[in-house]
Image (cartoon, rainbow, N blue to C red; front, top):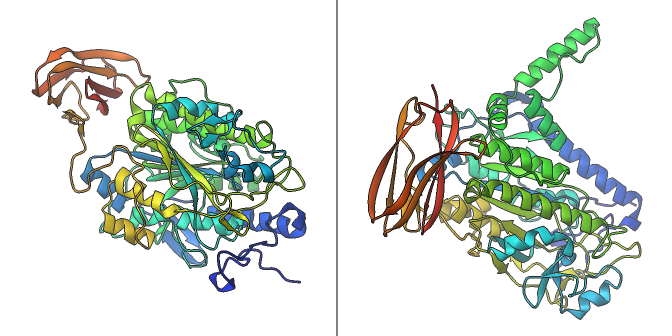
Length: 555
């Protein structure tokens, strides 16, 4: 008997949302069909990676040459708004169990359906009296307490198929289930409507993908990200300047040819120098990253941001969330996965906060689907539907958003989505990056309710974004500079003002201002004669907050 392993009965033509979706291949006990599901999922992702991995270079797809350039609407928008904001997406790869991540601690239905793997209210980390998070995620508690963590309940979309591949593509493209779409939502943002795409490439990649959906940065002109399969490949690229060692080949004629091919392949990555230079210039100021692939990836991203890489979007992935068996409750496999995510995010934000880089960065998690309400006979959960999303960062308006499932109104027996995932995307595009609402709607294919997730939104059409509360600080000029440069700032109320300069390792090298100042505009000269060439950060601190900018000294 033939089975549709990709579309299942999620096609709207199959029936209503309320009908059960016992999709063949979504459960461990479906045997060969489930294994086929995983093979298709991996094979298609591999094909996307191999077909669209090159960025800013000429490459072949089938018989057709494709060129992906770096000049895009995002860069244009960022220049106009004055923002240097960064978005990092973390995919919880495999379908994360949302009910054991964000726990309905007073719902008896939850505990009745999970007699072995349910997490008690006493074990959970409580966010309020109704909601807790998994105890393995304790590294997130100070982030929550500081108002820098948002939880969005029951995120998803209609006609969920419970297919890894379909779910991942939907999240990457922001399409309706079953609708044709070959470009990613961030790829469309990066390229749509740009008048100089063929003439104005950038010297740095607009996006870096370390795992995560292959299509998310795909555009009509190719893939707009530098793509790495995993953290090990990422670190190898940064350290060696390419994927492949051209010298590690046999001493034979075909070995020499292989070495030549490897050299050409490495050279095709036009962003090698900018990525490698930024990584070498930067450093990690925190040393508590877990030794996992996710922790390593975030550590490298922190180094590159601190080293001056101007890339604005990153995706990373943490696999293992397809917990069909032996999932565990407060302890076990799922706990270890969530603990790694929490520790990695916590270390990353702590690292960035040590020199003020956390002002610029927002993190968002997503997974292709949630999991079943009921535990299965193997002590795990099968493919489900809606699941929570988590957002982190100094610019996030912390709190609980959306509606928690009552576990009575279900979709095929599982929590029904109550928030369309594109509402979260709309907040990010509109408020974090400052894209105008009509353009956001065009990119997402419709208008979606805004949620107010961004605590410090960019006011669309108002530039520059130098103003923070009751003070402003401008980019130094000239920049880069060789001897001296001018830093201008203003304060709206009287109070203590401190202006400090830090090197790339976070060490303070100068204090330019440290005194009470009246309201007004000021300019300060900085002398770089006794400092070596390199990237520096200057930070203005007032009663209204702090803001950090970057400058470059070249001798």
